[in-house]
Each structure stands twice: as C-alpha cells, then as structure tokens.
Image (cartoon, rainbow over all chains, first blue to last red):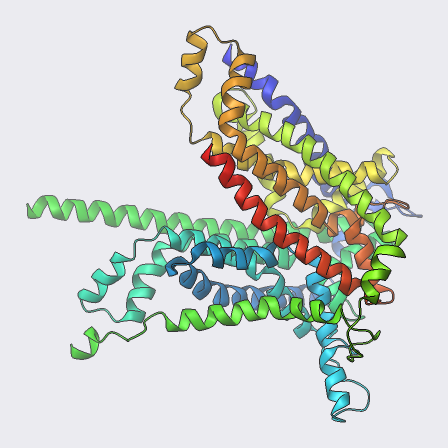
Length: 293
Length: 266
C-alpha cells in the first residue's frame, strides 16, 4: 500500500528531472565524444577531437586564469564572510542584520553587476570625478580586467557565503570559548582552536556556495571582463553562439563539471575525516572518563 | 601566564569592523544607483534633481514592460508547477518506500552543485536535439527544472520535522490517503510550501544565465532585457528600474518574513 503511493507522489518529480536534467547532461557527455557537424550540430562518429582541442596554450591559460580568479575570489569572500557571520551570530539585533544581508542577496543580479559599471566604468562615477579634478583627460580603465571580475564576483557571492556561516555559528555554544579562555587560551587561540573546528560544516558549505558558481561563471566576466575571454564559461558560450562547435562546448562543460565535482568530493572528504576524528576523540574521552572513574 | 589570561576589552571588535565594511561594500553601489536615478543628466556627472528617468521608465519603455510580463508569466507558472511536483516528491521520499529513492535524491542534488552555464548549455543542446523551438515554453521548462530541487529540499526539511505516526493515526481512524494529504500533510507543511513557492518565483525572476541560453526571439525576460540595456547602450532608465527592483526586493523580503511568521504562528 505504502509502496504504491510512494510512486504516485514521486513519479512526476522522477520523470521531470530525468527528462530535463539527467538526459541533457548525458547528452553533453555523449556529444563531447562526437565529431563536429559541418554546419553546427554533430556527426555521429566517435572522436576525441573535442578533447584534443583542449590541449592548446590558449585554453590552458584560460583554465588557469579561471582557476586563479575562482580561488582568489573564494578566499576573499570567505575571509570577509567569516567575521561577518560571527558578528551577526553574537549580535542582539540578529534579525535586522540578517535582513541587511538578505536584501542584496535577493536584489537582481544584473543590477548588482551594473552598479559596479556605473561606478568603475570608463564613464562611471570615479572617472567622472577624476575628469572633474583634471586628474585625467580621458579615463582610467578600472573595468575590463581580471581584477574587476574578481571584485564583482566577491560582491555577488558574499551574501551567499555569509548566510550558511551565520546559521552555523548561530548554533555554536559560545560558553565553550569562555571555558577555553578560563583554561588559559587567548581570545584568538580560542577562536581558531575551538570555534573554527566546530563550524567546519558551515565553512565548507560557504566555500561550495561561492566556488562552484564562481568557477563556472559566465555573466560577470561577460559584463566586466573585457574583450578577451578571461573565464571558461565565456568560451563555452562562444562555442555555442559563435562557432557552433557543440562537441567542444560539451568537452569544456565536462572540464568544468569534473573540476566542480572534484572540489566537492575533496571538501566532503575533509568534512568526513573531521567528523571521524571528532567521533574518535569523543570515544577516547569517554574511555578516559570511564577509566578515571 | 599573565599574558595568557589577558582578555581584550572588546574581543569581537575586528568582526564588527569587517561587518561594517561588508555592509558598506554591499550597499554603496546600490546607493549610487538610487542617487543617480534622480539625476537630470544622462552621464554620471550630476546635473540636478529630476524624475525624468522614472517618467521614461513608466511611459516610454514598452519593450521593458513586455519583458516584465514575460518574466511574470514564467515565474508564476514555473513556480506553481515546481511547487506541486516538488512537494509531492518530498512527501513521497519522506514517508514512502520505493525503488528509485536513491536516484531521486542524488539527481535532485545535481542541479544544486553544477554551475548554471552547464545546465543552460545542456538544456539548449537537448532542446535543439529534439527539435523544440526556443521560446517562452523552453524557458518555462528550464526554470521549473532548476526550481524543483529547491522546492523539494525546502518542503522535505519541513516534513522531516513531523512524525509519521500522525498520519498512521489518521489512517487507523479511517482516513484515506487523500484525506491524510488534504487534512494533515499539506496543512503541516504549508509554511515550507509557501516559502518554497516564493523562493521559486524569486529565482525565476532573477535568472539570467540559464534563460540566456534557452530563450528564443520574442521571449525576452526582464533579466535578458536588463542585460541588453547594459551591453548595448546604457540609458539612465536602468537606474530608475534598479530603484524599483531594489525597493521591490526590500518590500518582498520584509513581507515574506512577516507572512511566514504569520503562517507559522497560526
């Protein structure tokens, strides 16, 4: 009886995700091993061309640039988000601070990117100001480089990183820090040795919420990244819209998927090891308590 | 030892400064847009106070309003469909045993971890492969797909807090599955369902990257329109539009909180 209703409830979901999510992903896996069609599309012949095309200096450089931009922006994002989450969790006005973070979180993404163009653009606020002071005749090119991409990425994903950190730290028992300090730890020591290990799950979630969308980002480098492609996402889009090389678009997508999955697996492994170590420590402490008693 | 027991007077001062910096960083660019939406001039040089861009936004931006209508159609329909399918799925996964459970759990997790561009490109290739014309319908499919996992997980989180024995009790007392669904399961998960629906509407209104790939001629949504405004000729109308969207976000954030609190308290 129960079995029967389980299928009634879940069949629409199963069918939908299979048809419109799993199948399309399998198709790009397949296409990445096929030959490029003469006028777009694919030829049904096995080929490693799309992967061979990846072995060239230009693609290698963009991959490394993408990785570098993603790592630097993720680290910056987490470094800002961590103290923010800590401050919010300890504040008496949690709800108000939470609203302050949620507003930019829900504000239209393109508007948020555009706001930086309005400020840093060639005709933006700062350049207007510099021209007004006759410090420059034309403009200072703040935008359209890797740094602009990094700043805007940090700006975009900061709220995504703050929210999971806040909700983890909020559950943390701060009397543990007092205990550590009573036992002689300095303030910083107590934060690093007691708080950080306890909120590891939140940190991992935050890293994932920022690294994954940043690594596969398309819109930000498109809008503030300049003429040359700086990130992998742009190269995929070019293969789709300009050169119509679907196998190549698929193989680059595979690279992004593999890097994303590897990152995910690595972090999950760290988390698991951490949990195991904690369990072991707990059992050792229990044993110690038993022996002592 | 003395150095070790030293406590700084304001131990969390650094975190406070970083937070203030972060808030300034997050809001300063938005404040600039708000200020310049009232600028009489067309550039970022200040030419005096004016409502001219708001007038333009309201009375001579037909294309923009068409995009707004498209966005609303897509957002409401995809949120409704994903809420129904996702809620049903969550109920099934939480309270029933069936064969594909692990598959459903794993597959719904995938869209959360893959970058948007992969989802967009794979759907585009899929639609092209089976010969569906790109347009509002393909955007609807795409949005429903990326909303589904969120709805599923949000409702599931709500359901997990409840004991199956409530439903067993109802069934022992003669309730059929439909009665249990209408009288118990849906009422208890209502806050989860409503917040999932709101989340789906917002994510759909917000999406640019996936929509960019699966949209066709004549199916411009608001984010696509904003993109073309940014890319091809910035008009300060976009500043006025930003203010409308930011205010809308603030109102929604505040009212959604109150709405949820109201539902939860009942």
